[in-house]
Length: 66
Image (spheres, rainbow, N blue to C red):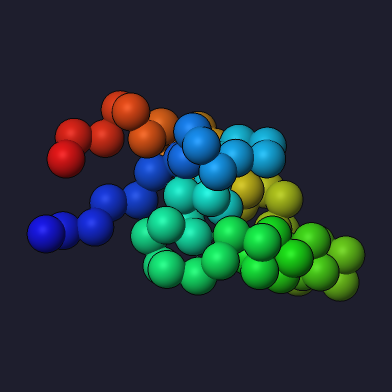
């Protein structure tokens, strides 16, 4: 079965991007959120911009065909 990246509707804080990424990778969503906040605070690239782009590009969980 092929994995698909989507924005989570159940495990969501803001846009559901990290919740969907956690489901896709198998990493805990809380850990991804902590890493994202730390990266944002430390000024790693343009993490905020990437997150906003992913909100518009990655489909919602219900929109993904399984």
